[in-house]
Each structure stands twice: as C-alpha cells, then as structure tokens.
Length: 314
Image 1 (cartoon, rainbow, N blue to C red):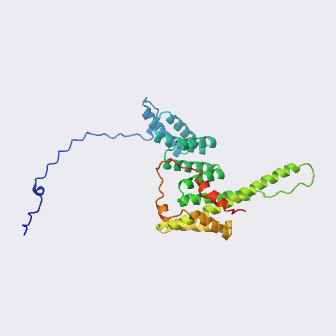
Image 2 (cartoon, one colour):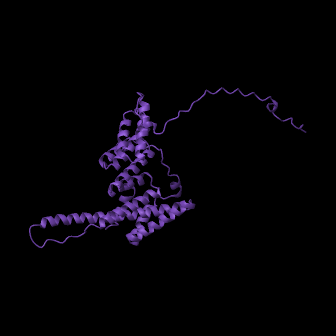
Image 3 (cartoon, rainbow, N blue to C red):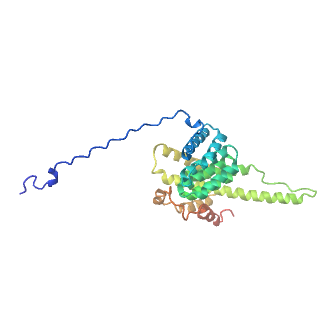
C-alpha cells in the first residue's frame, strides 16, 4: 500500500526560483505632429523623411480628389524609394494609376498597371492589379477590356462566385450595347456604291458573330456563378446567405432574358460542373502563392474553347 504523497516528484517541493528583476525601461517620448504637418516645406535631406512626407501629401490630396496634385506628389515620392522597397513602390505606382484614371489619362494608367503586372510576385499582387485594370477599363466604358481582365481573374480564382457574377453582368451589358447597333443594311438600288455595301455587309456579319459569342459567354458565366452560389449556399448564413440568394435570383432572371435552349443550357452546365468538387472549392486559397506555372489564358483553355468545341453555336 502506497503512502499518500509518496509518489510525488521532489520538484514539487522545491523552492520556487526567484524571477529576475525587470530591466528598467528607457524613457520614451512620443512624437506629436501638427495637423497636416506634411504640407510644410521639406527642410530635410533625409531621403526616407522626404518619401514619408510626399507619400502623406499624395494620399491626402487623393482623398480630397485633387488628383493632379496627388499625381505630382506620387511622382516625386517615387524617386526617393529605395530599390529594395517593392511594397511602397507598388503602392505609389497604384496610386499614380488611379490618379491617371480620374484625370482621363487612360494610356498612362494602363501602362502603369502593365508594369506592375510584369513585376507581380504572387497571386495576391496579381489579383489586386487585375481588379485595378478592370476598374480602369470600366471607368472609360471599355467593356471588352474589362471583360478580358475579369476573365483573367476568373482563371486565377476559378471558384470565386462574385468574379464570375461580375463577368456575367459585364458580358450582358456588352451584349445589350451591341444589340442597339443596326444589324442589317439594305443593298444599293443603283450607282457605284456596291463595294461600299459589301464592306458594310461584312462588318454586319462580324457584328453578328460577336453578338453570338458574347451571348454565349454571358450564358456560360451566369450558369457558372449560379452553380457556385448553390454549392456554397449550405456554408452561409445571415446577410451573406441573403446576398447569395439575391445573386442567384439575378442569375436566373438574366438566363430567362437570354433565353438559351434547354439543350444549350444542359451542355453549358455539364462543362461548367466538371471541376466543381466541394473539397476543391473549399481549398481554393491562392492568396500569396507563387505565380510559377500560372497561365492567365486558363479561361480560354479551361472553359471557353471546350464550350465552343461542342458546336453549340452551329
């Protein structure tokens, strides 16, 4: 029979070690800045301080919608950024692109985003840049450019229902725009303008082909977004669920408007369902991953070409 306490470890009864006395902390005085301190004249030769001041100036001007002033400050700030500080450099260039966008400088804005896209090191950076590029195209009413950027976003994040929904809505807007253009023109009754009419007929033929392709792409994207919304519905609640239900209703209404045949809808659904595995959808987390081996043409290769190979438009 064991005596109570005989199995305790001896360390239980050892005297507690004394904690080392805390090292006295050095006194710290917080730096207080005046309101809009960055608006004062720069009287320092420190490149880092100049960078900070100009960055604050630019951000403040941008917030107040003084886009030309913000662009000037961002441009000046860029020259003081060390070569290794890619984070600040990327932030400054994105600010410059937004300023150029609001100032109507579309070419300069897209050149900056293209530079940043070539320098992107992970999927998080690329996602932000594709968002920015799509917004620039949208600002200038370039639906084709916006659709191209959204397709790249869907290829990068194939299980993101809202990217697909935005792409579907952009395709629908482009289709409605194309539908307002004249589709036929009467042949000439006389004169020497037969060649001109033939050229016009070719243009109308290309317009009809584009309408058909955009119509099909809108159907594909609405079907895909509806499938994703349904697959994720069981994991949602509260306002998130309500948003998804509203989006599903919008997709259903859009498909009713587009009026695809039942066989067409079935073919599209079969192709867009092939990779929708529940585990794969939940594990689709690409933020921060390397861009090695990534192709931005995956939308074309992965879905669009396969849809067209079914002969759905013939």
